[in-house]
Length: 340
Image 1: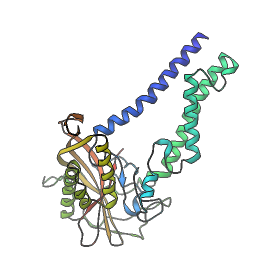
Image 2: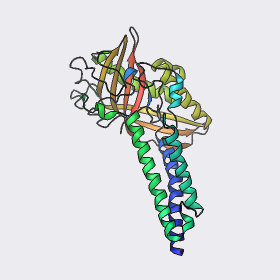
Image 3: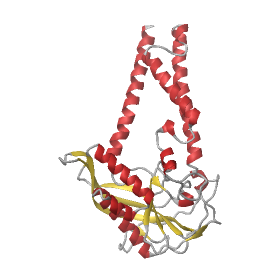
Image 4: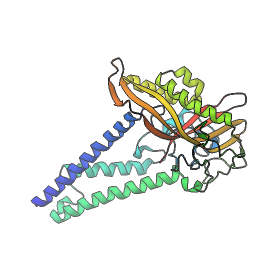
């Protein structure tokens, strides 16, 4: 019996430690990468918002789905702030999780409390039954979590349907003029995205040719957006990004001020980039570009300039940026996605 109590005590301590350490690790990670976008995936890619962009040499991994977006599955365009708000939340607060998420969270809470206070599903039947109850609790939590996570991934991240998409770019330019790889620009990009009711179809999207001046604009926007973010210049961000992205930037800056923090980004340098895909919807052009860049990313305490996170040492990041352009207008930042 003493052995049983000791075992259950160890398991309970481990469960509490993991429960406390995981959120703390996530907070520390987000604070260390506080550049524009906060290392999250946000924005919209028109009718392809729920279709994973093709992998490239710069970003061979799959792009993460948006956790902040105005778009809704099955809709060709942006639907309004409500959709972005619905996408917020943790693992058990995803859109469509509903009863399954509540049950999984409830079983998880019940299992932790049972282990902490000495109870269990079968604790009243004696020591052997208590061991079985403990094992059942742990197994049930793991099974429910795996089922819920797999279901959500299949519903919101149908990357397998697009795994055969065209990969663009063959690495850095040998002439050294620009880090952005233009070898993908050997003609119009095909529009071949469809599946599971998400995204657009070839009949709605038209190929788009990306020219050298467009690549220069993408590289310039990378630096300009980070500079405006560092200066907390929301008016400038509204000029460089779509209203949706500007609203996300404004909200993030407000949260920084509430936390008495300020993020400073400097020495932004594009190291490598290539085109994932480019297309036209109606009169709107879209271009999704994978970019690997270096930057100095620091979070300071407002007023005192005390270093909170980051350092003077440059770090590297690889992100997928989508740009959009209307007739007679310049390119704007429409989305940022992280890579796996």
